[in-house]
Length: 521
Image (cartoon, rainbow, N blue to C red; front, side, top):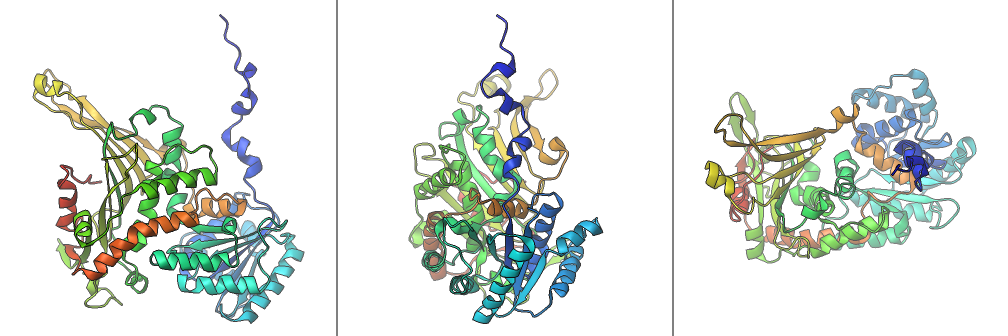
């Protein structure tokens, strides 16, 4: 039988188009003004301005676009533009093309003033009216709060009082992007949500976690749901356990003021690591849209058995703090030796947890999470360790028991995926040896992945909330973390670990109790 030509199949014309071409009509946002509160801060200078400029350079921003910076400093538009260029050059993002930068710079405006002063927002209101007239931004607003959490309620309230927020469903749209940490515990997160909801509808609030903008994190869903080979084994029948590691080689650097009030559990586990866990453990969503995906993530968080009470917290969690160490000629200070850290600080710089997702798919499969500073390697990865072969036939024949298979999804620094399996070493009586099949994004596609903030900024401009946390998702994560924080606050000192090692010995005992060991990158 002669097969039908591909073009005769239903929808073939659409499938033949490259993905980028199919999506092109959705890639450029409507006219808008992006307003960044905290426009002179580190986040804006290091991440946001370069990301917006790269989007502009790639023609992913509308022609009718403006960026308005708001901060306490008083300066002119020209001074703001000059400082924006200087910060781009300082952090390695110097524009290659003067003409393109000039076209971008003319879209930059600045408003200075205190965030609790209504006069600041009257000046902002006047500036936005000018921007609408000059740049035809049509009254569409994206507010980005690159400011400390303590100032976010003030800014939200002032925006509402100043008539700078269009109601949800209006022809002119208004959205607000809120940086983490979103609260310090469950109660403060609820209070912040309530404050924002006085001014903004939930559909207008975009709670950002830059980890969700990383290419590998986004590809977790593609990897799982676009490849049929994984779904049959993605469950408790075949998966032995899952490890999620986010480690840093640096200490607190200049962030001790923030870190002393945060610690590893608040800073990393409540956001980054739990986000990764939900993407690994979630059920297939009904559709690839924001609500369907976030619904499944929330179900995972509600399925995690809570860790409560001093005894359970001591058994299922580990907290550590790095101390002074010397490795060869390299000397590393302890956390309490760092600038602006209290000499008796009990803030944890390392956290590890054993969690159980108690549902049909994952019952009995431990999820191990760990994160820390001053560890041997900077890496973010997910390791799915499969069960060993059910019958040791090779052990009988060759005296060599095969290692369980493992799937490693690398989020950073080199984004990619590795599958480890057993192979025989060449020779008449060669032993078994684990080998890997490796996929590297940069090598495979001949290009570097876009920065996380590029994707997330563009998505928020487009109104795509898929990669942003919803109210119930944030509160469900805090509901898991808050009892641990309370137990740690009432407990003794964090366990010390030498800077440059993989954390306290208790972290090894946590997984060894189940007959496992940490995967070392």
